[in-house]
Length: 176
Image (cartoon, rainbow, N blue to C red):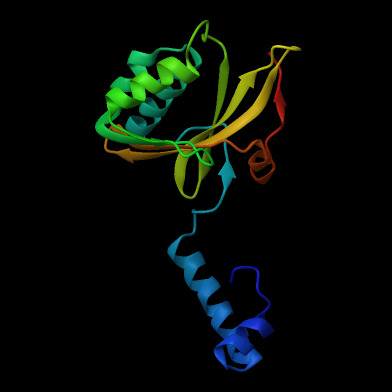
């Protein structure tokens, strides 16, 4: 746990090293059984469920075509929107519409973004690539996860850390 050595845990808990190793082993097995598909994975394919697939395809196309109203139509009324590590947390369609119109999809935004589907923490999401103004192609920008509520999106979390791309075996750049 927390990058500690088993011997450090044993000392802290006042337990033997073998008992700590046994506990950790059982905990890992329990987690694997309870969450078999909840590991970071990427896939060019979207989920097999047709409703979820359609929702995510609409979301992807709306962002790539800079269609703010289509994006907003996919959200429940009190959707939350966060962008760690920025201290930004929005709630509701109106606040999200204002923010993305002013900060993300402002100006000539059509074609500014390319999104690749992925799964992270058991949730659907996208790797975001931003158009590179200095040379052809798109640069790694962010990893975004979505929480779904039926046929709508209830939470959007965009991690503004391109270094995360390596954990998903994603390239740092995409061609035009």
